[in-house]
Each structure stands twice: as structure tokens, then as C-alpha cells.
Image (cartoon, rainbow, N blue to C red; front, side, top):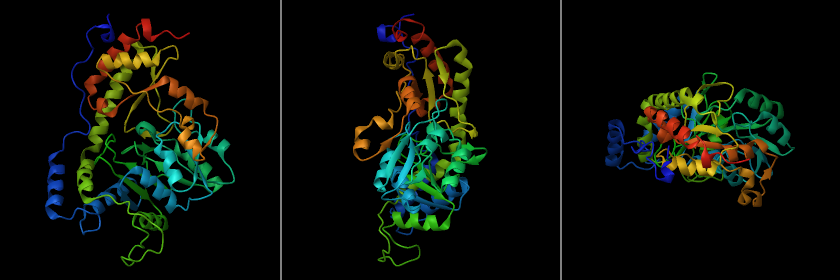
Length: 391
């Protein structure tokens, strides 16, 4: 069978679903209402941001939340609210987006880049334990690809050493761990509404937390150092304007009503693909961590055999109309971070993942029927020849 990259017929010519999807009627109605009201900013008297925050806090199993301009700012504000700053270290996983590290730098602290579990690619408690120092103030588990990190051992480790826990839930809207929602499992959790995420307003983020004093400090950080209930021109603390707008909130609030149905569609894709795996021995699905009871499936992560030429695989799959993503490079290899003082622990599992893991993007997962195209294209490209040529 001739590969499309060599002039053959592609497996798929139909487009994949667009992301973000078209606005639904509830979004259009609420956005129009906000636009016509003129109450666009977060401090003009509108209620949509507050409604969004309340809904997200309830869904996360906590009482408090603050909406922000993006999740990087959310992680920064969460760290500030928990008292993390200059002289402190925050342990983060090596297989994650760069914002996990830059948010720590923004708070004035030092990111410590630790290895992930070699099987599920989430933060490893053993690696965290090895990275501890007298300056460690917090850990930042990442709910990678929509799976829930194994939080119980991480929380136990944090409690034993007096550390704060900030969950990076940017990719995990609707995910649960032992039937508890992510975001509310640590001291603070942060969601992203950036354009690729499961809920999006183009940009945006939201912090949730259970402790009222932490909430007050986070709120102050995001509102120019004001105190809740205090004077408008009173700024007893240093803070910034990090707020989300009413227009963005109007795109997001109605989305909560359809989020679970969209998660179900993505899980249907993944289940259908896993049924095809017996015919593709060079590929396996990266498993969920222990304790994941609902995977929101932001990404489907696949591990390919080390003998596969991954660069050729990516090029050939794109030609077949089934594009894959190469995923993250190890954070510790980014000289911009180490130049700013980031400390890197040995990360062999992350380095292996950077060589052997590929992603299926969220927009593709929204078409469960496309699981067959993914399996067919992988089987075609991996049937021999240039894709399998490493010693």
C-alpha cells in the first residue's frame, strides 16, 4: 500500500472538527446580553464573571474562586496567595507546558524540575521526594492531557513536609480523581480557557481554593492589592489587575452545560481506538494514573516503539490526513529556564517520553468515528519501510 507521502491516497480527506466549536445558542444569547449592557469589565457591576466563578468552585468541590486573564497568571496568583515567593522553591514535573515553570519565576520563586512517572507521565512522588530541599515551599502537580494526577501520595508527601499544593488543572476541566473533582484536591487549583482547552474564551483562567484566607490573598493579588470589602483606592498589598472580562465569562458559563457530553465524545473516541490497538503492535496508549475515575481527554497520548522513526511517522501521518503532535520537550532542556535559575533533577523518564510519545489533539477526539481513521493510518504507516528503521 503506497503511503500518501509517496503519492498514495490519504486515509482521510474529510476535515477534523474545528476547535473551538461554533457558538451554541446559549452562548450567543449571553454574549449579546453582555455586549448590549455595556458592562464589559469585571468591575462595572455585571454578574456573569461571578456566576462563572461560583459554578466552577461548586463543580470543583470548594467554596471560593477568582477568574483571571490566563492560567499562567492564575498559577502565579495561587502561589502568591499561598505565600510562595523569593527564596522559595516549587517542584514541577518535567513533562509539562513551559507556563508551569514561568509562573513560578513570575512569583519570584525557583522552579525545580523533577521527573515524571515512566508509565503515566505524571508527577512522580519519588522524584518529588528526591528533589526536596530546605527551600521547598510547594509542589505543582499537573493533570496532564485531561487525566488526574495521583494526588493522594502527593498530598501526603506535601503534608509531611509542610508544603503547599497547587494543581495545574489547565487541561483537566471535568476530570475526577477517586470520584472527586480535580482542582479542589490541593490548596489551590488553576484552570485554563486558552484557545486549545476544553472550554475556551480565546484566553482566560480560573483559580479555585477552599481556604478563605488563601482566597482573600489570591483575590487581592488579582485586584491590585485591594482588600475584599475595602476601599477602592486602598491598596494595603501589592497586586495587579489580572481579571477576566464579562464578555469572556459569557462565552464560558453556558459551556458548563455541555462539557460532560463533550467529554463523553472524546472518551468514546479513545475507547474505539483502544479496541483497534491489537492490530498496531508498535503503539500503546499512555495509561491513566492510579485513581483517575473520569478522564476529560484533552489529549490522547500514544507511546510508539523506540524502533520507530518518530519524525517520519509525524510527517507521514500528516500526509494521511491524520496529524499527530510531537508533544513536550523536557523542561530541563530549555536554556531560557535554567538561565533564570531553574534547578533540574535527573529526568530519564521525561527524556524517553520526549523521544517516543505523540499526541492526538482534542479537536480530533471530538469525532469518535475518526478513531478508525487514526488506527488505519497508523497501521498503514507502521506496516514497514521508512517508519521502522532505527537499530
